[in-house]
Image 1 (cartoon, rainbow, N blue to C red):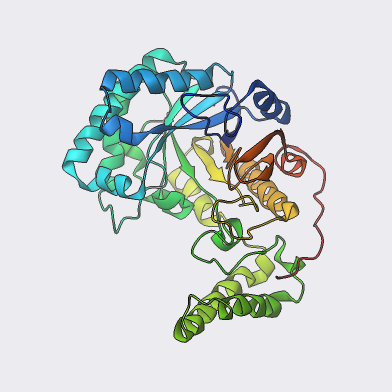
Image 2 (cartoon, rainbow, N blue to C red):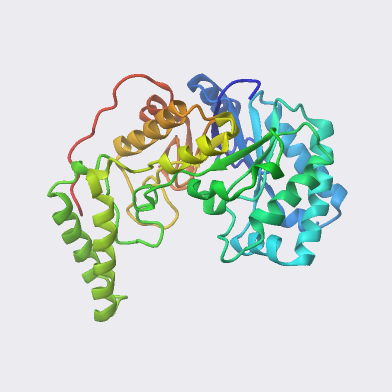
Length: 376
């Protein structure tokens, strides 16, 4: 935080081709990010390669330290995160053999990062969106403190970032702050309600075209239920009983979405109570990943063409982060399902940022509410 509040973005340039046309970070794209106001890049390194090096640990370290260095050479701050599967994250907490491999990997990586990079420029973020306590009961009490100690012994000055289960802010209070030093940050992922931010691509394939503010939906809550019910009824993959169950489930979800006309989406009051009661410096907390899926998503569902809704959500997260004096935010993502760069198709990316989203994150002008939204 010596360089001010974090204004970050997730990027995924290929490890062997930083400037690849599809997902790479060309100088033109880096210049666009800098001009907009971004100052931090969140990049991903392979957990799998560190746990089972395909050649050797030395080769793996060389490969990924070089990747981190390529990001650092841009002049942006760099958050390094582990790319991992759900099953791998569970094993890191529950399986002794995987725990040992991970501790060894942390020792090697943290030693290299601590000696090679400036403490003002590069930080290491531990496992992304850890599984819940019912699957990994030792995460808060032993695993996370153990990872912190293993890394800190090799990199005494490097910032370490931890997350609660699923990135949910309400679980931050499960960490015992005495297990960590003042140079440890805590990241949460504001993606609530998921039926809005991930509409059409998660476990609600029939629920999409949800706007923000939700009152822009023509016909209100009643019409939204009718539209979703019609999609479910037309789904030939579902039996009659399944359709009945799904319509009831969607009706409950939609009722929650419309509660207080959506004004309480991403309510951080529980998080703020913990900040006050724990006495933690709010600059140790970061909204570490957030965004809204666009129509360019890999599932092929209709998703969201409504850029005004995406802009309103991003402005809300930015303003709440500032109001609570947190360390900043990292938006998801440069390219892909949650693209901030303009796209013409899935996997086809341009060099310009979407202006409405830049205004939402960095500007001061009131955002247009957008036109009325109709179901389809």
